[in-house]
Amino acid sequence: MAVINNRFKMMFASLVLLAAGFFWLTRPVAAQLDSSVKSPVIRSQVNTSALTYTTWLPLIANHDTSGPYGPWAVQMYDRLDAEKGYDYAVAAGVRWMRLRVSWFDIEPTNTTPEFYQWETLDKNISNAVTAGVNLVVTLEGNPTWASAQPHGPVNNLADFQEFVGAVAARYPQVHYWEIYNEPDNISNFGRQGAVYAAHLKAAYSAIKSANPQAQVVMGGIALDWFTDEGGSFDRNFLNDMLTACTGTCFDIGNFHYYPVYRANWEKYGRDIIGKAAGFRQMLAAHGYSRPVMSTETSWVVSPRPPTDWGGEAVQARYVPKTMIRGAAANLLMTNWYAMTDVDPDQPGLLDGAENAYQPRPSYYALVRLNEQLHAARYDRPLTFAETRSSYLEGYVFTDKVGTSSPERVDVIWYDCPSLVVGIGTLPTDCTSSAHYTVNDAKIGVTDHLTGSLQILTDASDGVIDGKIKLMVDRNPIYIHYNP
Image (cartoon, rainbow, N blue to C red; front, side, top):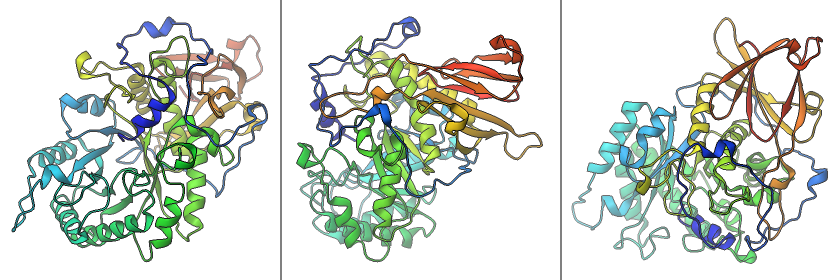
């Protein structure tokens, strides 16, 4: 969470909040990158003109997005109320949320018997239940009496276990408990993978005793920007933790993904799909086959026009891209970090309190995503034989699952090679496009922002051949086969 600030501060000097509005619709976007902007070291250079995409382990098809909780989530901070953007999230159709819970806030002093201050969390859980929201609760924020580090090892595992058991017992409505955030940071449990494994074991035992149905989630690890690259994360952490994690330590694997590191994982697949595949390979090397989620992904908003690295438009395009790729990677949940600006470095779907949490275009992209696919099931990626271009990226969903007339929905966009970058550069979007032919005589096309539906027929492209030719650019579109 907060440690992401340091990574972005290494890439550019400062970020400021942008006023929301719809001026971006006609704003020209240039592919120019300010050469003064520096990024953290990225390990590998990639020849983007000859990319191939492979996936370790077969992706499981038919990921159902239509259950009680679709696979897209947003990060909430401390409270589920209007002041934190909660009402906007619910209105957008979000039914997964990640919520930070501080041990310090609940048990600031160590007393006998224990005295827990549950009031705020009681209200949060009640609000989530009322709205039908599924929570991933991140337990962190050690009290000073329990540890010298707010997100690191505790002095006495019995104290930690006691607290974790108490909170899990009080809230059986919570099905997912994440144990700390980014434990691979050297300020947290970095270089102490075995110590973190011991904390996971203690939490696992306490949570399962309190609620056998609850799921223990590994703290989302950064798994990028390592100390040998000048960063803050322990390259060997996952290996050390899994080696020490004898028996059962967790139910769900968890990683974070930020697209500035896409080149590190591209050999496994596109974007977050590649990191999911690489992460699963690391788990499998230790004999672990677990469901996987990603509790952080996003795109920065920066005040550096006319570059497209941190603009509101590219952020909005990335919302459906990362969420749909998460479904294609069979992630249990993909979480956008965050709903609101946590600080000037964090790319919220809503801007800051000083602007009354006005929605950015990215918020409307999330609304459209849920509108278009809330009752859909992920089926498969589009093949090269269908797209005829290595840069057209698309995915097939089946809408109205369980009805007598299910419908196909494709989501497709042009995946710019300039988004895969090497050392010292930042990803930028492009203005390229490619033709995509739909083998149908009538379709409905919806953009990723307004949700307006355009009906196209066989004759729309000027040729009567039972097909419709589209020009697809970097903006995702939803193609409905039975509009």
